[in-house]
Image (cartoon, rainbow, N blue to C red):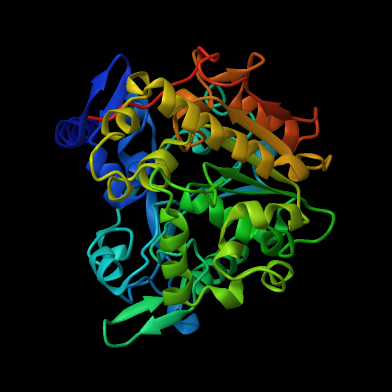
Length: 416
């Protein structure tokens, strides 16, 4: 335990520092590694006291050709359920951005986002993965799984580049992981929840109906996307930074054949990688948790350095308190676009929403934002309670916060 604490101290010293109870991150760490900063470095202060869960390689993955970018076997972390949760399964798909060119996919091979060789042998299970009822009231005793992300296309590509020795096998990794977990008891599940954060949140949308189809109709199956509502929007220069990136991902990694046919029949494949164009056609009940001012999208899609060569947005994208009135107005338009994107989706009784007016990203993984004494709330309901109420049909949840700066419960992220 003491060793883990010192590792955490070292990580903070390299990548950021605690300010007013929150981790202040280096902006370049976020921008160049996608959502990576959130998935690993940006945990709550109590993460050193979290349950540590070991890594399992999927030994049968090779027969499927289900390998990471560098050809190594993929894997996951599994903590077994017990008692009333013994036959319930929560699958969380890890996030961590995407790679859209040979150059950055080759770089990604040298990290845990492209090779199991560099993955942690143990991961802290916090937030929705916590095993403590006071931290995770509805899912603490379920079988909880974190599927590691090492393909760079939200578990959806199927291609290769022999010259660069790159394997784009995200779809096969998804199938191999599900097959392995089914053989370990998931086939007997009475309840299932597929979740994911960031790029994993997009993956949970893309694979939601596939997950539903693994089980008998008598099994309660739903899906949760956290911080995965990436919008096809114009950046501050009038360009489309994220669409350009997604176009590279889809074409390089052979994603087209694994996108929903109901979408690709009338839209181009890149458009069908954007959640706003596919959430309305997901048949399985789906819950969206998203910050209306998603900081990953502000940093990497709306106002990335490439679209802001003079640095007019450099302070605003690091700290919302330093945004000008004009910049806040621009971000309000982004929020309005998000609300328009979910309008049809929200009309279905089976779907759920929790869109808070925070500058945040991936709020279900972190204990301080999932369920704690001062967690973000909408109408006095924390994210964990809202998700639980929806999953167990205790109440319908369609929670949309008033616009910034009305919400005083936010855990807004600040960057160096």
